[in-house]
Image 1 (cartoon, rainbow, N blue to C red):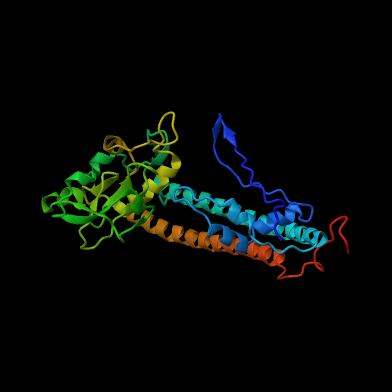
Image 2 (cartoon, rainbow, N blue to C red; image 1 turned 45 degrees about the horizontal axis):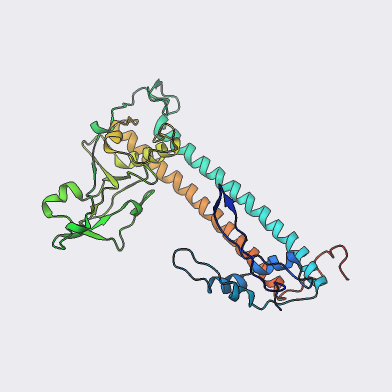
Length: 354
């Protein structure tokens, strides 16, 4: 039975400052179809799958009204539609409540993660050590024996090679890393694009184990430590390569410092949420804490272990949310298609027949 009454297609255009921002297929149920029941039907797995499979348009997929309007829906009596809707209202509200609790737990885990990183990279492992003012507004106090030299005295910083399609000859092709390939603590090395980088340019435009790659734009400051073994891999101009200039630097500690600094707003620009692009000149001037090398190693090992535990907890919570959402979708589908009979377990809505 068609659930859209007369199968009319009406375009509802939302406007913002006089500009159309979207349109909708408006379904106006007939007297034989309750709106709440129709809403649940449209959220069932079966209907979503059918509509998804019918969309057209490469840039902005759209659903065809003629197709959607012809989809057959199981249509129980109005009284039974009301009972099913009441059952789903109650059961989905319970599931939604559990999902919200899990999402609050996720936020607490995020806060805990940042607090653990912040404490370790800015205060160290000894809570009783004498502190001093860092002189850096967003940093505050640091242990008195830690140094705070500008980054250019610690790491050589270089931007990658600019991609110029018109100059690609194909004679010196090697894979290269882009901004999108560098995520937090993860570097994609699969199916990389290639560009021409001659052997003489390798020292300037390739990476090696222990380098720290930092995103110049997008999510400014996003970083990961390179582990490529013997592979020859370049990097594009959208990335900064930080290479330690002495044995007093431990890149894994610096990675955790960037993870803390990005979240703490160290890369915030005046009048904007983040710097649109973190230039090499800006980056080289930053002053991050530098504990003695042995402390850097100890702090990095501690954070790797603690963040691993928090990551495992986060994974378990995410899995729980996914299972709850799967349960919700399955319940809706089963109820609106009659696979489960809820008449004996759902409270009768007011006015519904027994």
